[in-house]
Amino acid sequence: MKYYVIYHGVLAIALITSPLTKAADGLLDVYKKALTEDLQFQSAQQSTIISRANAQMAKSVLYPQLSLSGQYINSNTGTKVDDIGFDNNSTSSYQYGVRLTQPLFDMSKWYGYQRGKLDDVRADLNTLQAKQLLISQVSSLYFNVLSGEIDVKGAKSNYQSIKQLYERAQRQFNVGDIAATNVNDALARLDQASLAVLAAESALHREQENLAIMLGTPIPTLKKLSDDYQILPPESGVERWVETAKTGNLSLQSAALDVKTAKYNAKAIKYKNTPKLSLSANYTDSHVNEGQNIIDRGAYAELSINIPIFDGGYNKAEQQRSKANLSKQTFALTLFKRQLASKVRVAYNDILTSATSVKTRKNAINSARQALRTTTLGIEEGSRTVVDILNAQRTLYLAETSYETARFKHIEKLFALKQLAGNLSGADIEALNQWFVEP
Image 1: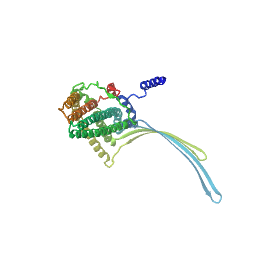
Image 2: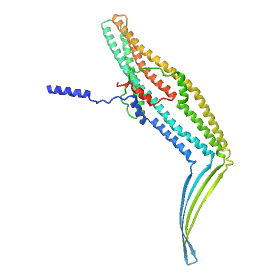
Image 3: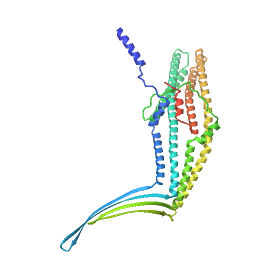
Image 4: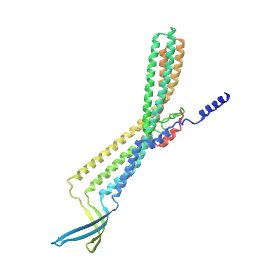
């Protein structure tokens, strides 16, 4: 029996100390998984490939075009000669040719090429925009899950506290110390707390599923944000953020790129009806066998010019459309510039307000705890009722959950400001990840 006890103790210690439980994932772990699993990000990557292909296609029309052609014919014919019979003829021939064409002057293709070069720039821009969007979405979904877990934990804790109060009120009522209304109030609050637990669990499950959709698998256990994480205002003044956004905002760069693209597109369409000059070189080799072998070889060069004269007004209408599209893109760019400065200032002020709000909410927790202690003493002295302590507990519960949620929202707002400025990157995820700890 003694040997069994010692063995059982050693086994228990081994089970406790062995790494059977996988470590929780931090924000950086989830971000790295999303880089390979998020389908929206993968779709954006394909858009990048499409943009690069468009750039190459636009360039290819300026290069020499080489083609090879060939033909082989074998025929057997018969001619009836009076009553003698048929005179059979057999003929075979084959030929091949090579043609090389080089555009010499085509302004429409040239501006099309200039427009295509912008697709290379757009490809890089698409990649950066997709990564910034992914960072924003990953952090938001991650914090939504953490917030949901805190809500569930707080709702369950609140339920247990109210349950204890209800049981206490029931005992006091049984001995005649309090009226039945106190018991009924406690029971009503207990029912509400039970419903709050169900609602919090349902909301948490919904947020977990949202994150699982991005990762393609059930979500792992997530690390929590350390209590030591400092909530601070932005490092620079608001006007510096505005100036940074004017040059760094990716959506602004994309809008400016749309204007440039529209300009080159309008020029390409305008010059469709201008003369086009091309040079071609041809070589042919023909062999015919009709009883004897006949060989015909030749090479020649061709300089051709094509001058469009009338197309039924199609090009004129196309020019009108391209000019209108250029104006549309220019107006959109101007509007975005006006809105961007305002958005940056609003986002900056939101962070200042958020930082103050988090600090105030933390103080509210201490105040709510002190109020609960005071109320608890009051009910023991008979100066407070069960309803008073229920209200005090609810105030503390709301203060604790709102404080954690406010911390998460502050980080999301900081990321949103960085995204507006165009400098949100994976380095921000790495820096923040240092503040996540095991739950």
